[in-house]
Image (cartoon, rainbow, N blue to C red):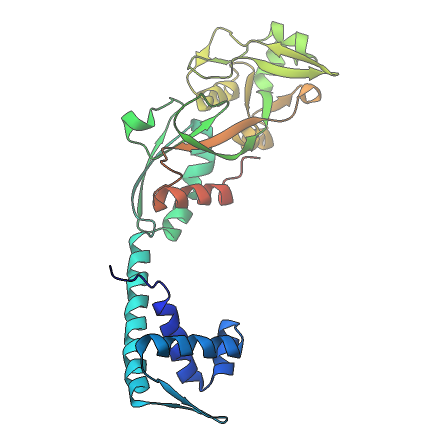
Length: 301
């Protein structure tokens, strides 16, 4: 049975460096080794090959004819090895089609504006993005990544937390002029609360009333299927909505929406996760690139 020697390329590299640097001490500094360790390594190489490669003296090293030939071949072998590693690395660089399903507010206000930056960084990845609050089955839809808000159901998917978004209660000035401004949690019972009609929606609104947690169940005359519709309905004066702070920041700054009941805001927020199919902890380079990019760039505050 042939002997597998996994250190042959390392021996070659040290020997080539000794020749090019003109001695054991200089090569040892390059590899952060001791000169004696380098000398022993070259000695083992000579013993394995059965020939003397270097004639040693107190002042210099001199290559034997066999040492010169081995040096020439070793330089070529190391260059071929470097080329092979570079080619293999290029094969796993992020590339190919990446299918992403992302919920409305995160998709519209945080992911899509960053697409040009992502494309500039990863030009070989082709993005296929679906923005919807519908919960997709990654296996059936053949999606690579889904970005979801709220608690995650038990599944065989792997989840990576992207962050947490703070929730706020908002309504338009026109709505408040007509219906009045709620001053406490109980006042909400007199208001039109915009709810959701899709599965996995967080149905209850939670408040912290001086240490007592109170919940309100929205369910007015209008329910909508996604957070962006709730935002537009609130801006139009259709009622009171509970939305992510980043989702309505521009509306609040422009005076289109007013933040309500902040004294009763329990803090915390809704977790945002990216979920993906993974086996043995492995994932395609394009998926890893997208997840790392989101962690680095997506601001959910």
